[in-house]
Length: 267
Image (cartoon, rainbow, N blue to C red; front, side):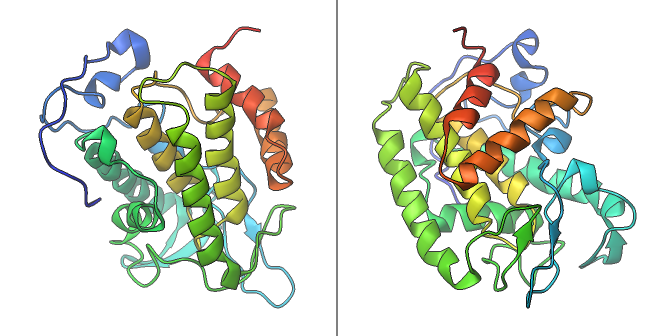
């Protein structure tokens, strides 16, 4: 599991089920461990990515991005359980994500510091049992994701170090009990958009991004939110995908608008 400080947490007010479905099972008080419900808006199915499947660019091997839209039985992955379809592996992937989320909410918030090691640990702890050969390791090949071409694989380690340093610098500027203002919204847009643009891992980048965001929301005691559009929300999906495409070009404004909606910010 994520190697986090197991010291006693500051007591946190337990969120009500009306506040966020199963948040009472997540933002728990004291050191009592509770499972993260699959119904949680930031766990299980809702943590999955929504980008199109990664496809093979010129001179690069085929890889796949985790996506609700592409979780068909025709997608197969070689795992410790054998060669399984994505739909067969999906429940195991969800359990891995839930384990990591449970470890995050049992950590001291001030220990949830973003670093390459922390991010790789999220990936390894969630998916290492299924994919021991590459879980927790940056991708070693070039890929495309939908219409986006992420950086070359040899650039990933340096970019991830820069990303983590930049993000921590931004997080330090929002304070320990931040208001939901423009600085915070841009910080979270950067955290999500630039991570997915770098696409550091062979697969399951969307899930790792959402586990990271989950941890940051908990770290700053921010209200629970739904991190991906509802499956039936076609308009929301299109807006989100468009915002991610803009983030690939370092334009955070559309993704900031998405975060405003997530937090319920009124104009």
